[in-house]
Image (cartoon, rainbow, N blue to C red; front, side):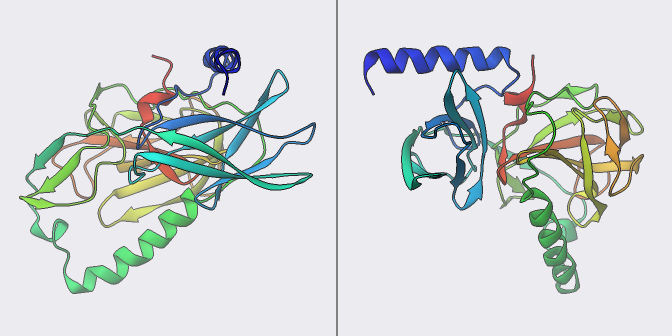
Length: 270
C-alpha cells in the first residue's frame, strides 16, 4: 500500500470512531478493520470460515473482524466474495502477551468436574457455540456498547488463568464487581437467543445484536428476560449474582464478534 493510500485509509478509520465502531487493535482478542474489494454490491467476507461485518464509508468496503485469543501473530487472510468472484485479502496481526491470574475455588468440582458433569458441560458448550455463531444482518449497524452494570471493572480480559494451581482457558471477558441484585441492562438493542443455568458460568444470558455481534452475561442472580425477547438499549435483563464458578458476586461480560470472544473494553465509549 502506498503512503497516500495508507494515510487515506487511516483517515477513514479515524472517522469510524465517530461512527460508533470499536477501537481497532490488531492483536489476539482485538478487532481489525480491513479494506476489502467490492463495487456497488456489498461483498461477503469470512475469517476462519465465519462471516464478518462489513461497512461502507466513502465508497470503500471495510471488514470489521474479531480476532480470537488463539490467533497467532503474523499474516492472516480474509475470504472476500464479490459479484466477480472470490479472492483473499491479507492483513497482519501483532503479538500481545497477557498476564496470568491465580484464583482459589472452594468447590473442587468446579475445577475438575466429576464424570457425570461432563455430559452436561458438553451439551452447554454446544448451546453456547450456536448462540455465538449467529450472524443476523438486520437492524442498525452500531457496534458501540454501553456498560451493562455499574461496578468496579477489571482489566482481566485475556488473562491466562490458574484455578487452584491448575491451568485453564484464558479469561474471555470483562469482570465487573457489584453486589448481588445489582441491575444489569442491555448495552444495545438486540434479541435474547439463549439463557439458562450453566455448569461453569451459572445463570447465563446471550443477546444477538446483529451482524455477528453477540454479548454474554454470566453468574446472574436472576433473569428479567427470556429467550425470544426483543430488548432495547438500557432495558433491564437481569441482576448480578454469584452462580457458577466464582469467587464472589460479579458480572462476567463477554463480547463476541464473528464468533471470536474479543476485549469488551474496545466497544465502550469511555
